[in-house]
Image (cartoon, rainbow, N blue to C red):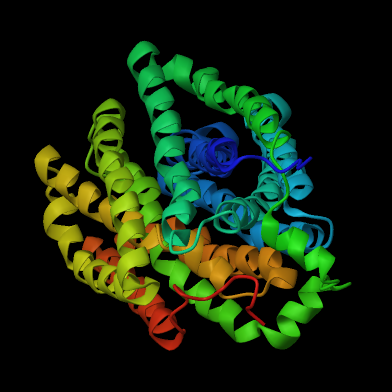
Length: 437
């Protein structure tokens, strides 16, 4: 008697399994960006006064942005560490560990007393936990992207790789919406005293949800096939650096524009809008919530286009549009008019979604299975150092010295850097993930 599963039964099971997989990849990046943007918003609004109270407002903002950048320095380290285990023992177990480190660090940030309570120890603890947050985050995206793309059917890797790329939009809306609600319901004194801690503590609930989902998924087919063919290597990072360093650099350069668009249009713009343009915190957070919807809309459009036309053409168009958008910063954001500011934020975040969506498929496609977790994760997070870690800090310095036109020039330069990375790489849309060497 045959024990094979009938086709009409297997198909729904495959669909249900894929639905669990894409949700597991999505939920992790949603929590990742929730955690990261919770800190980014706090850095723009309250970290300076709470942890660096004896400085001028400008110095407080710069100090807060320095702590913001610490996690981006830690992220490549996390990518190396978690990438090693992801390529050695599997995607599933590594993703569970990265989620625990990331969520635990974020939750504890919400418990750190301010400078007025414990003095210099407060910013030290903040920096340590911010570093820990970066370590966990460094291992998150690469595994989530692989979870989706290594389960994708032929010709749909861009679409499946889009689901972890939707995480930023949802995480952003959740964090920004929570801060928006707190801004409406609390006084400034209450917000600075304890209200800003609430979004950090909520992270613990989201991590429990993420763990529940991820503990129920199966290992990816590509990794199982690599085990059967005895293709795992003892030191994935050494193999990556020795044989695949150039694709790693290309991937990192391609990521720069995504990070720059996101953090300039959110962290810097929020700080500038509230501190320099004197817009209310509530109104600016509301404009960001509207704009991020367009980032979410751009993500599936760009992913589908990358499956149809290829990763490179879609990204090149996005980079050229991002280059042009830098010239819009002064007349739109600098006007202080809510309608023009909303238009600027919408343009930048739409372009972020358009350039970010293909990366969920592109970065994994640059590397063979035995170093794919390490390669995709390191490229993604090296791009973060170049495009995000120092972006709000440099933007603040440029705004102080030369005005918004200089900050717009910074966005345009970031777009050119990514365009260089994309132009020099091969097209990967039709590559077989199990045959990449």
